[in-house]
Image (cartoon, rainbow, N blue to C red; front, top):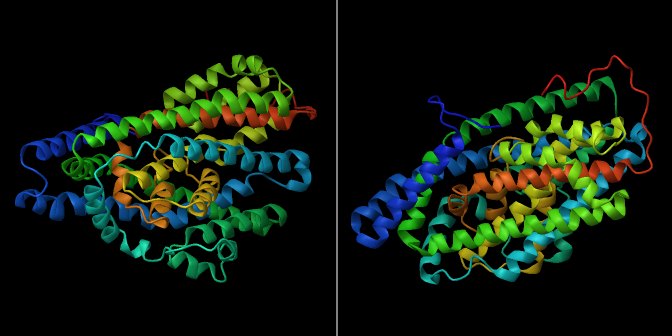
Length: 440
């Protein structure tokens, strides 16, 4: 889906313009007058800094209702596990396993190539101090150190409302996961109505996220101005390295992990698989929308891959929301890159936490443009990285969004292929319309 402003210009072009304006202005200040000049300090402290903070705080405001409702709905849409039997359980387990592999690849690539290294430590500390002040309400709740046993104990909130009020995002996500499973297991008219209410909360939150994202071009300009004024040309070098590592990790997952899963788990020749899913991949890349690619994916699954119709419809429909390998990988790469950029070393335990949140975030990410942004922002403050760093990646996010959406959609088809192995199709009435016919 391509959002547009009133003038008809697509939102991603406006975001690119904001990125270039902020970057150009910041670089000019860095080279010509310096970031310590009094009027530059006044501008960044009273105009561009607060403007960027307003955008970030609006995201923080919406992150709890967004993740709770999206995660509950994503799990609940898996349907009645008793009636779905093996298909439902296999879908859930494979979603977790393959998303976990994606995040591990992303984290491994960032640790290996370290694209965020090389920035002047003094400049990084300067912006780190600004970021800590801007997100103090959330950062102050983050633990200074993490005990492995205590970490698992803290996953279970004694009071979910207290956890939410203190922005303890992982316990809230665990509660949402259990709540979604409870909705699946306790099917009744009352729980159906409750699920409808939560879907309504998700729709309202997504609408508000869309409204906030429309401020992104202005926020990007302000955030990039501050970053470029402080870091200068180092910023462009680090940004290019980040894009290279992120795309490289996605390519490994696409052309190494997926073929192995299709071959071993689905019993299908990977060449046959990729030949059959070419059209959904092209649609996903060009639109950067899993929802836009869904009708094409359904058609390819049934006509090209010859998968059972019932399984394909179930897995692909759920996967468009819940099975987002590319999004999980992107979130992990982004968080570690920004931690390196700001000279913050994350321990293995902290990286494990990042991996868990990214896996759950892949299920609970809204299907809207830049829908992963609130998750990334929240993970950043969980590990003590200034959320202003988001401005660094927003300018290139459109291209990365196209790449990760392609990975997401292909992953849904991989999942459908594996789950379909050994399953037979039910007889579908001849007068039932094809699912892509009405949407295409």
